Image (tube, rainbow, N blue to C red; front, side, top):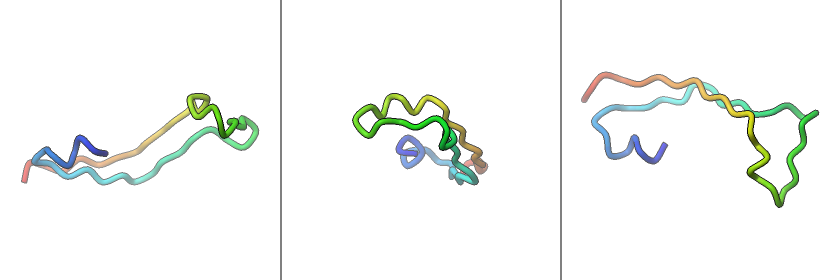
Length: 46
């Protein structure tokens, strides 16, 4: 998300998903969140 603030395009995040509850991640090991999914829309140049 941060890189889009300096571009001349807009990024709209439509959906974010992660791993289901049957794949718990310890709070002290955030690197364990290996399943990630994002649906986004990129606009034409402004």
